Amino acid sequence: MFNNSSKILFFTMMIIGTLITVTANSWLGAWMGLEINLLSFIPLMSDSNNLKSTEASLKYFLTQALASTVLLFSVILLMLENSMNYEINSSFISMITLSTLLLKSGTAPFHFWFPNLMDGLTWMNALLLMTWQKIAPLMLISYLNMKDILLISVILSVMIGAIGGLNQTSLRKLMAYSSINHLGWMLSALMLNESAWFIYFLFYSFLSSILIFMFNMFKLFHLNQLFVMFTQSKILKFILFMNFLSLGGLPPFLGFLPKWIVIQQLTFCSQYFQLLILLLSTLITLFFYLRMCYSAFMLNYYENNWNMSLQINNFLMNIYMIFSFISIFGLMFIPMFFMML
Image (cartoon, rainbow, N blue to C red; front, side):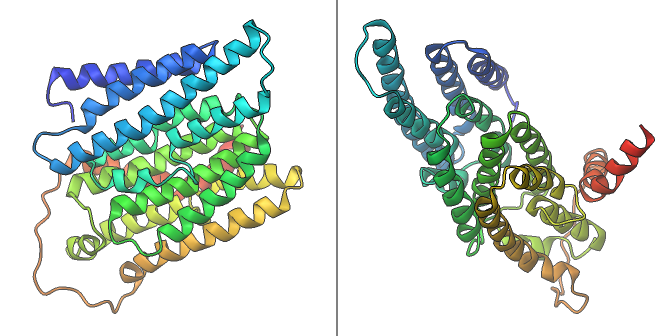
């Protein structure tokens, strides 16, 4: 990814853009940070050797530019209301602002650009889009008090994220729909608690990084590659699919912990309908993760007669194994850690 100095510059600018948005004390400052972030991420996406990435960067620019324009429009309306005493419905302005931020983060019902865009990216760019690029919009959404519209977005996100992933063979699209589903959980946490959504986000980023680290190392882009690649190393295959189940939120893996926190918060606030929808959607996501893992965990699964030699970097593999160990057994060690304290 960092093959030349310009990429490092754009990567730094992208981080600075997000930090400007998060630390801004006015909506105009936040908008400026979002623009810097957008204009820095586009050169990171575009690759002269890959036509799909050029198409993806154009799609990303168009959707984000539309969202930025409408956001600026709502900011100007807000400034007019405050300075010139214009009679504008403040909930209407908040609704416009919220819809632009949902479009920026790729949350349903403004998610249509997200899976198609992911399909044209390299794994490292996809990871940035799924994790870092979500921080600024989600932070700005937490400033708005629009719980009714957010609830609709949460329900749509978790259902579309679950149903959309059912029929996918592309791993990048699968991860995109998984991201939309997790966004629904994050928005649920955001509605209840300032810190709960950030804890969820950190766990989600960690688990996604582990999976994408593996996909990038072996250049895996489609489901059938998973079944062909690891005929030599059964342990590697087991670990990879256990990480999938951890991302899905299956107990006793670490991925269940952030979901557990959100479930507890929702129970305290008596939001049982929302909780039911979230849990049903998670069951669907776990169903298609388990369907993929079925071949790895079945002993009588048919394998190819030919073998593919895996060129493995030992240092990277050791790092992957340590992170995977945390992902798989982390939930068991956390109670021990608190008991020791």
